[in-house]
Image (cartoon, rainbow, N blue to C red; front, top):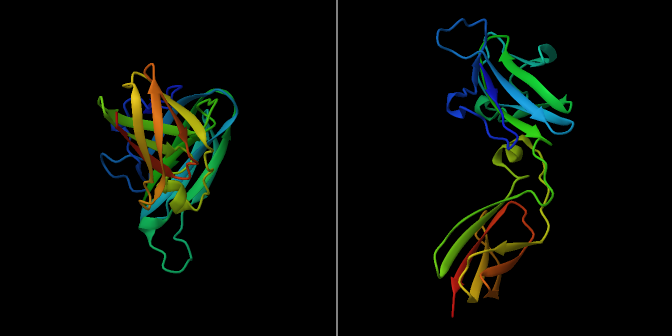
Length: 225
């Protein structure tokens, strides 16, 4: 089955996506040996496959990636020869180039055993500004916002991939009650304060000067008057 990935990066029917790939040599009933994607890159990009866990290595698992029906990557997955290695923390990744335009990508375990996978599409969603995701809740006199650096994930951290710090910027909130607001910024990773400031809201627009976002931060906004 091929899963369609929209231009916004969302996977249709993602609840049916099984990331545990059993080798074809196992011949287990009701198991998943491969997963496919229908994509459309707006520019040249990459498709990254993460092997986060080796659940079974006998017979040896083999990662195979096909682009438009043609094999472009085939690698056996052996336990790493590192100190204190554990298969549930395998955390290896492989990136394959994908040209601009529509394509099909298929990832399969053409060996034995079982591997746990995860995927990332690089340069898939065009962005004109910082790679920051903003979420929050609000009422008339209180708001909490969470700003996450899209370039930082636990998956990247475990795989030893560095993240790109997002610079300072401006965030404008609309339909906010006019008046003075206390903004308290907090690093959500280690709970250390970042800064506190008073911000004026006029004509329903509250303008925040966001600090540098390394991983993720939050801001608590309380109306004072």
